[in-house]
Length: 228
Image (cartoon, rainbow, N blue to C red):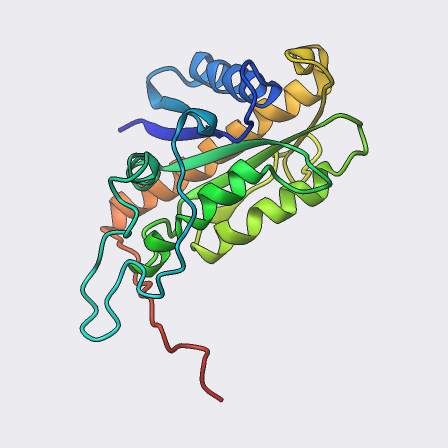
């Protein structure tokens, strides 16, 4: 079975550098790995995203442990993306840098993955990598990547960087106007390296899980870590 990656572009702009870098990187990986690789790219700007309502009963009943749908299901387009994340072997997020942080679009979306965490960590052992595009070469890409990691780690995802060329935290690209990232040769190379690394680790995990018949033992407990 091929490794399937989900690319998620977190820019609110049309024809964004985030989408350009992500698209080119996924295309190059498809050319490299052939039938062993499939992918899909989602632009969050096209997905209606309602804010998390902080309903306090998210994904799993506190009394009997039964799973619950998000209370926002059907009100926007988030559930479809969540389903695709669960089905994928790994994901690559691409985000513009805003004040050294990922985009507001990323933040609004990633908070809605909480339902999957409460449903016994349905994203556990999925491999994740990040691309950050800043207007300046030292414009906060590293802090953006690290901030993007935090909710992914809370979901039990396995974070990777950009592989052996420089073994950095992810792809750190530079761009100004739309499409300018395509002229950043080093940034483009890093983007591909992130996809390559996510693919390689996801392939190992997928093969190992299939051979061992492994399923994640992780379960969510509302009271774990809340007691003295």
